[in-house]
Amino acid sequence: MICLEVNVNGERRVVAGDASAEVINATVSLYPDLKEGWLEIAGSVVPEHQPVADALWLAAALSAGDVVEVRLLDCEQAAAPNISRTDPTARATDSIPLVCAFCDKSNDEVPGMVASRKAVICPQCIGYLHDIISADS
Ligand SMILES: [Zn+2]
Image 1 (cartoon, rainbow, N blue to C red):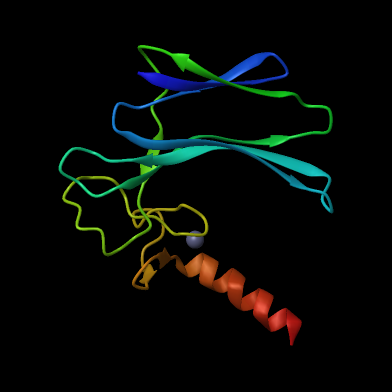
Image 2: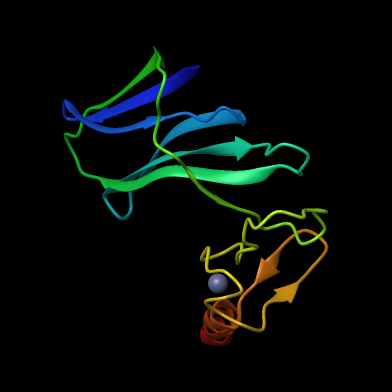
């Protein structure tokens, strides 16, 4: 299968791939105000006879001067992604956890999730959002 090999400063961080992968993205984000960068290797997988799920291979902070190298690689074995779903309407019968769309915590970690038609949010994140909204007024 074809995979993404991701190196930071010459050091291999992950070989991302999965036989059921639909897409694998390598994203470098820069937050100039914070003087921080962020590297995320994520995408989606389609487990057999199940709806699409979110896949995360790597999430890591970057610093000024870091060199990120992404290479398409033909490989036989890749790192397994963390797999989750945020869509409560997905008609899944597998054991992939439904997670908060903001913090990725699952229903087992944070009971009492609130669901919309497209995502779920945990009580902790509702609290953080409430604090943010209250601070502005
Ligand atoms: Zn949350």
